[in-house]
Amino acid sequence: MTEHAITMRAVNKYYGAYHALVDIDLTVDRGERIVICGPSGSGKSTLIRTINQLETIQSGQIVVDGIALSGAENVAKVRRDVGMVFQSFNLFPHMTVLENCMLAPMKTRKVPRAEAEATARQYLERVRIPEQADKYPAQLSGGQQQRVAIARALCMKPRIMLFDEPTSALDPEMVKEVLDTMIDLARDGMTMLCVTHEMDFARAVADRVIFMDRGAIVEENAPEPFFTNPCNERLQAFLGQIA
Amino acid sequence: MIREFSSADVLFILMAIRWTLILSLIAFAGGAVGGMALALARTSQARALRWISIAFIQVFQGTPLLMQLFLVYFGLAVLGLPIDPLLAAAVALTLHASAFLGEIWRGAIQAVPQGQSEAATALALSYGDRMRHVVLPQAMRTATAPTVGFLVQLIKGTSLASIIGFTELTRAGQIVNNATFQPFLVFGTVAVFYFILCWPLSLLARRMEARMRLAVTR
Image (cartoon, rainbow over all chains, first blue to last red):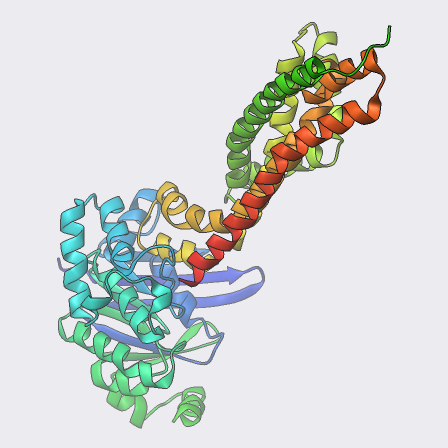
């Protein structure tokens, strides 16, 4: 158990001629909380999507929890241990909240129905919407839907959670409820990678903040020096814009 | 020998409906299997599968059903594989239905937002589970109405089997007309029977569409 949670070495990704990820080297320790920010198109979403191979890479190596991301079997193993939350929630609209949370554990972990339901209710309780279990996603507010999405991912009992701009599609008054849920999760020691522009969240929970630009990691630091003393001038400009 | 159009003739035509129905059912069932395979191949990651399914769909959508019937019925006979008209019609209509249902269902699968597939993938669901539990149930909503609509086309399409001598509804009408020579009456009756078969399906398609819309906004 001495390995890192995630190791990326010399990772490169292209969309055709476009160089989307440029020589990414990144090591994430177990329990570490990392916030990734950067201008749109800088490759931050692409970066976290390579960790569960929603995006394939052209060169380099990614090791998640000691498992190299290569071969269908390894990829499936990694996906079982890595939860993901999307900007647009992506709940399954034809299933109730409870069914959304039970599907993957029952199918991929072969958890019996009763146990899957108990787990689902437990995590819905944890994201503070147990009373919505039998509703359909469309009946919930955006903030509630995103919390269901977090519960759904947690039901797989992942060791790592990836958040891809989880609050960007939310109305301002709903951002806080989602961030609070994420902060709870961080306090419990979950390894987290969050792509977000919520700098208060970064200050509150991040161990490290990473700034990306044009597909490369250009600066990474603990939150305090990252915000108060940025070295890179593109980061300075970026922080100036979002402040 | 010309005789009067009688109730016995109506009964003869009525009995032929079962062959129209049997042929439609075989073609629809076969077409459902073939269409699903084509739709999945068409939306798969494997380029070879995509190309094969595109070629199949293009060929069968781009040529008349009648030519497909002739090719199966006369073509196989020339190759030394004479088959009876029912089998020939069933094979040709199945291929035809596969191509059309394949295309309808491909569209329905692609209409399901990409994020659904991604979320299922991120949850480690296998391709089979992803399709069965996430993508296809949602695709069904979009596909139901056009599928039933195509079934109506298919039932009417079976009338072409009369040309290779298969005695279904239309052929029964031809036989009666040859004896009575009352085309308006005879083919009018045949047309009414087709309408009675197809109209409820059209209504059903419309009802299903309305119900699905309700389900989505639920």
